[in-house]
Every structure is written in C-alpha cells, then in structure tokens.
Length: 279
Image (tube, rainbow, N blue to C red; front, side, top):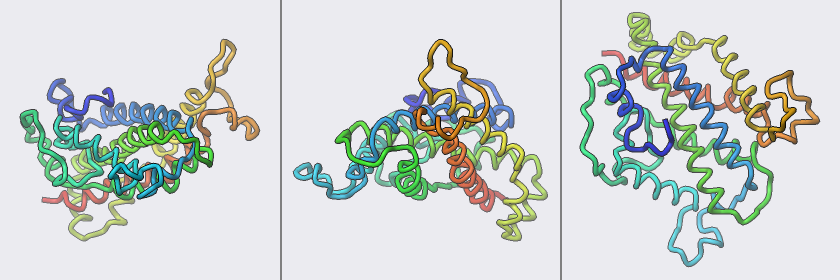
C-alpha cells in the first residue's frame, strides 16, 4: 500500500479485499513490504547530513517563525493533523506521534469495524515516544554523515516518512500478537493472568524467523543501497568491510537496526498488547 493512502490504513484495505488479515502468511507478506518502505526511506534520509538543528527546540533557523519546538516534531504534528482528517488514526495499524486529543477529528465518515477486529481496535498500545527518541539518538547517527548541510526541510520530510514507516512496522506487532493469541489462547491467557511478561516474551519469540528477517533485510540493503550498473551483482557474498562506504546505507547496520531496535520494540508492543488481551 502506498504511504500516501492515509485515509484507509490496514483496516480500509481489509474491508476492500476479502482476505484474513490475521493469517500469518498475510502478516508475513505485509511485514516484508514494510521492510522495503523502511529501507528506501532510510536511503533517502542518508543523502543528507545529520543536521542536528532540526531536532533542537528554538534552533537559530527557526527564529521569527513562531515555532518553539524542534522543526521535525513541528512538521510531524502538522502532517499528522492533515492525515487525521483523512481518518488515518482510526485504523488499528496506524499510531500517531501526536496525542489523539490534539489532532482534528476525521472529515471522512467512520468505517464500520468488523467484530473480528474489536480487540485490535480497542486495545491501545503506542510507543511512538520511544521510537522517536531512538530514531533521533541512534538511527540517524548510524545512517547519516555528521555535520550540517543546511537541508533542514528535506531532512525533516525524510524524517517524517521514516518515522511513520518504522512506527507502522513496530505497531504491526499488535496484529502478530492477536494472531499468536488465537493460535494458543489457553497458554497465553494463563501467562497474561499471571502477569508473566517474561513468559509471554518467551512464548512469542521465534529466533529462527528473526534471523531470517535480519538476513533478508541485509540482502535488500545490499541491493537497494548500491549504484546499479550493467555488471552489478545484486545478491552475492557478504560485503567486504572496505566496500561498505560505497553503499547508500550500510547493509550490516540495516541488519543491526532490525536486530537491536525494530524486532525488540515490535516484541515489546506484542507483550504490551497481550497483557491487555485476556477476556
């Protein structure tokens, strides 16, 4: 689904097409598409320097604008206000960085929520504050050269697209959690009622699948992150250390991004969701 389809979200897609949104095969396909979106957005952001002023409240370039918060947060809030009118955040797979009570109401009429989605709609899990903090403090320094190139608008727009893509991927963990709960309801219910977060984490973790995801992301970063010529070998052996600087994003770091940040935060979302799931 195109990023710009803010008015529908996963819920709108599902109502328009007859498929089982909790089928693990469908979930896997959705997560794989989201990998592409995240990688392409990171590549776009990486063309600009870190540009620390866009993350600093009251930065010099904002003087006289009336903007008191940092520019990226300001532009993110403005973007989400537009998307909220298109009912983006009424869909269970979309979470705003701006508190919902500070966003305008949707202009479009509400969609009818299927009974099968009642838990995904009613259980609220949102860790966007953590995602934003991690993005600015860890991910941007990983992918961008240090310094200031003055491209504040372009950098902030790329930040917004990347933050939204990463947030969507991580919060899609609620769909994964619901599917897993339905496959083992008695075991999950026992752990939930016991308040056993560690036990829930152990039950939902599939290390082999996580390893496959990390390897696939590294391969994609290798393919997407190089300048393609007629004799380019897209998928081959591991990239030698001395050649990593030739890539738009470091494939090894993209694997680390999933290993250290995206997968762990997704599993935190799954546990947070499941702790509220038992009837």
